[in-house]
Every structure is written in structure tokens, then in C-alpha cells.
View 1 (cartoon, helix red, strand yellow):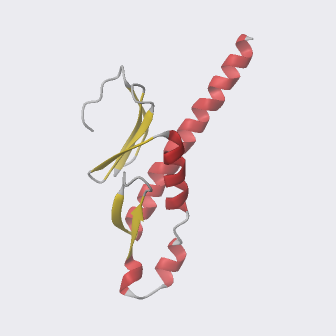
View 2: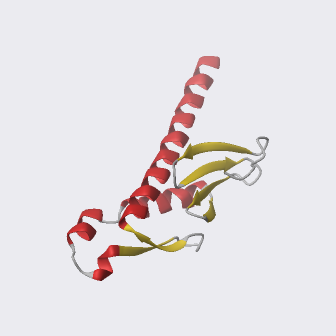
Length: 118
């Protein structure tokens, strides 16, 4: 992982194929996956995560044609555009779902702590 300033970013989730972090300066989520780095505002990140989760992996596995071995994954703002194999799609899902879980957990903990302070 490249050097990231601890003052401006917080690692959210990391796998063998990539990592995600939150940049406090730009208020965005940065995803590094297999030598591709893309930046998202939270709403764009959630749209991208849902899009990757909507890929029908079982259909790709059972389809014996060559076209089903990989699928083009793009975001609306062209932050990410790659043709990924089935394994890469599963690995990207793991990274995005782990990132979303971390963001949700952090939000829940902040809400609980703020409620205790009031």
C-alpha cells in the first residue's frame, strides 16, 4: 500500500487484491483494486457497490459461452471501467461490501456515542 497521510485518510477495509480508505480533505472514498485507483463521493460509492453486487455470478458460472467469462464493470462517472473475470468480481465485491460495512459500523458507533453524550 502506498504511503497515505494519516492526517487526511482513514483505512476502511483491506483485502489481498486491494484496499479502501476515506479521505477527510475531499470527503470521499478511495478504492484501490488491482492497480486501479478510483475516487467516489459516498452516494456514488453506494451506487457502484450495488452495481457490482447485482452481477449475476451464478449465471456467469453456468453459461459456457466465452462471453460469460468476464463482464465490463463501469461507474456512471467513469471512475472505474474494467472488464473483470468472475474471480475479480467476487474479490471486488468483498472489498466494496467490507468498506460499506465499515462505514455503517462507524456511523452506528458515532450515533450511539453522541446519544450517550446528550
